Length: 390
Image 1 (cartoon, rainbow, N blue to C red):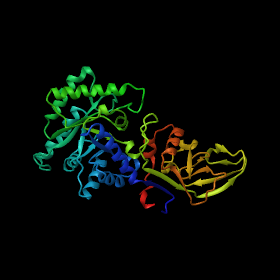
Image 2 (tube, rainbow, N blue to C red):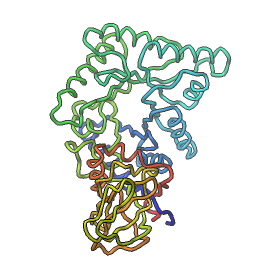
Image 3 (cartoon, helix red, strand yellow):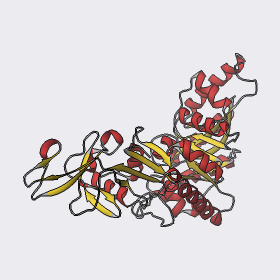
Image 4 (tube, rainbow, N blue to C red):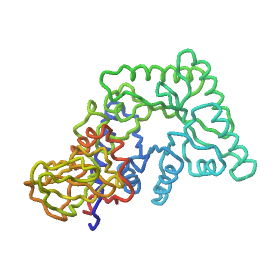
């Protein structure tokens, strides 16, 4: 390796996490499928590395955030002559002709969250059929999104809205060019042990699903459990469980953990310079840190342009199991750490995110953020490398 900053991606850990979670799920419910959430470039881990690895481990269902991400997954698998059973876009896609052509031709599943949006999709498909851009029988696979309490996207599941919602979903199923294959919702507080909201959301979700079934609408793919739900609520498994942060070996929260998971990303930087600062010397912008005595410090060539944000300034990096406190403000391209009494040399690698997941959690506590965000913040100028290449 020649880079000063690298993100080592352990394919072995990723595949082991997937198999462990899949087996844990199917042990409770043998027919339940694991859907891998690979949005945001596989939570910053690189879909080019992760998607083929997950496919090789047996994954056939994937979820993303946008049409661009969906097409990328389709291209990765198509290039390998593979075919995902599901590539689900969890959010909004503008109902424009070029988008619709892509969705239909690549077999991508689109989330539908309102009758108006479904009509817009249908109208676009009908037009493209008439113009012979799409075949006469072309249809777009859809999953219905129910808003069980997140209040972002979805059909209303309040008790007094069920009748209207079912009527709207029935109308969606009768629109030309749409093939409704699934229904889902999303938990807001499944990673909080004391919250009752998960039970309330599940009840609201099932109320609509059951009412749809009574009205003659059957969904082949039902799913509501996210990572925390997968670990905590096997009774709420449906036809699928969506695996996000747990795939990458980290916990949904400090309250919901699983010691069998292995972190997939190890983020490293190399020591660029070591020098001595004297009592009274200050370090970095704003002179926030001033040495009280003589110190040996190392300059590390990673900063907020790499995703090592300023808010981590009260955190640490790691070297051979030792924690090295960050001194002063983190800059765009560099930061300074305390290496007093540490046997470390220029060129040595330090861990920003270590292989055990300890330091990412320390940094998140220092910044008041979560591991999801920390992973996604790692910028594109940090190359992702399969770990076995090291």
